[in-house]
Amino acid sequence: MLLNASIMVAVIVAGAILFHPSVVKRRGWQATITPLASIIGSGFLVLGPLLQVSYGLYAPLVMGSLCAVAYGFGAAIRFNIAQVGDAHEYRGALVERLETAASWVLAFAYIVSVAYYLNLFGAFGVSLVDAGADTDAKLLTTAVFAFVLVTGWTRGFKALEKLEQISVTFKLAIIAGLILALAVFFGQHVAAGELTFNPPVETGWHGIALAFGLLVTVQGFETSRYLGATYGAGIRIRSMRRAQIITTAIYMVYIGLLAYVFPVGELELSETAIIGMMNLVAPILPLILVAAALSAQLSAAVADTGGAGGLFEEVSNGRVSQRAAYALLAAIGISLTWFFDVFEIISHASRAFALYYALQAVIAAVSAWRNEGAGMRAVFYGVLALLGLAIVVFGIPAEA
Image 1 (tube, rainbow, N blue to C red):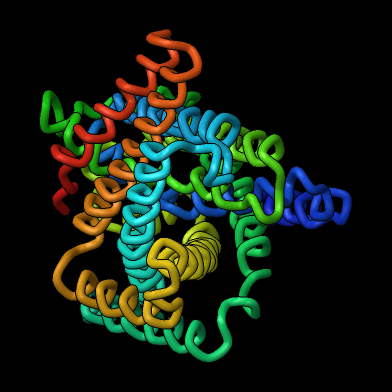
Image 2 (tube, rainbow, N blue to C red; image 1 turned 30 degrees about the vertical axis):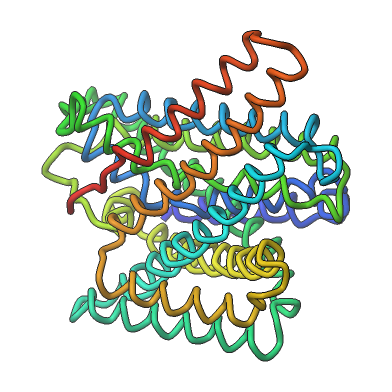
């Protein structure tokens, strides 16, 4: 009872701070909200159990590696914001073609990511119901796709724009409560000498390939690249870096506290496994985590749907309208829902974004080469591009 009360106090205090006008109205924070919402909504809840089941005591190491790779790709995109910019006439023909290709790839990556978000929404939406959970989750996901499509066709997403800021603030407040609960739970295990060091299930090349398939769980920082109509290059660069640092800190603390307190017999691999695990920590956690998951996945899906519609219209020079893009997104997303499980969709989304990041890294390498010659920066971005292509080719899904 005392722990439940402490969790709620932590959630309320964190929420009060994050919703305070002095924070909400700060321009730097407003710019950070978009990439932060995308990253923190991309798989925070599904990633913990997945890493622990697959990698055991090495879960924090894998988490750190994922964050480091994402930060490297973020560095390439930040370099492009600073050096390449948004003005087409200054890019050069090669960079312009690469940017167009990257935009097409990103538009399709958004389609897969929306399927990922809404399938998680469906899974968590029925997580408290036992009967027919898989089919019910797919039906709920399909219904939400229909809602998103109708909203986009009739009203657009202007009415839902505030959802992103409210959702990420709500999610961060709940994460504060979750971290507090896990810290207490971890401390109890330390005091009792009951820390558990599970051996990894996934090792060698298969373990690396599985990690490749998890890139989408730390994806979302690239959204800063496309806020040029609202923010200048400097604030976009800082907002992306800030969002990645905040989420890296959250992910590392979360995985570090989670990785050594659950023995193998208490672990399962499913998209909603975190609910059962957190029920052992504090009875109140499953309810607030479901609420956080639903708001985060819906807001992320709305943001990426709007982004996909705008990208398709832009890169097709108006030949594909936003309405047509929404219909395409819904059709492909519903197909993915019924033909693939969540872990397969996660892997497909990771490869799609890896291709986009690889193209951005190529753009950065070309620009660095032109400006600095064969220096370390150009080599670094070239290696990142090769890593992105390796993820595209070799990334595999987890098997529940």
